[in-house]
Length: 202
Image 1 (tube, rainbow, N blue to C red):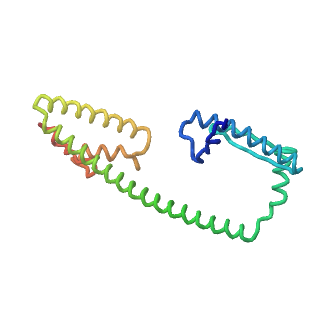
Image 2: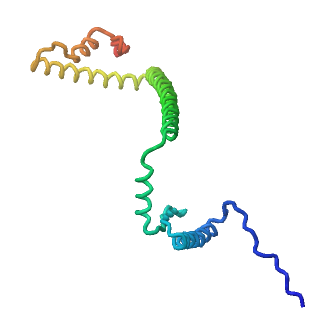
């Protein structure tokens, strides 16, 4: 009687496993098999070996004979002198990296300059808008509101004059900004604050 024919072991396609849970299970199984093979190779051939693997979660797993640290230290001590080709390659890579960083710096500097100009224009536009809004607000007031605002401004003027007089009695008025403010009230207008004094005389 003929034996049952089998298809043999199915070959697994070498590509990233999409399912994360399956990927973790496969990693655990394959890692154990990898370390086992490394141990067999070390025993059969009498060689020193070290393997370090990081899981998907960033956890490190290692196997070494006689130990991972011993093998790594030996490797580093025997390979700490770079070859001329390696040095040239590193130099080229470093130069290319510096050029790339310099280009990024210049690009960011230009962007920053543009943003500064936009910010300056925005502040100027905002100041002009506030001035226009104040003028619009004044023009929109009725007689009663204007008289009330006039009284408030006159009260403010009295407080400013009184404060200036108090400061005059305490210190010389030289280079004192409040004197300029008082002159604005007394003489009419100031270029920086274009609000005529005579608007109070309604």
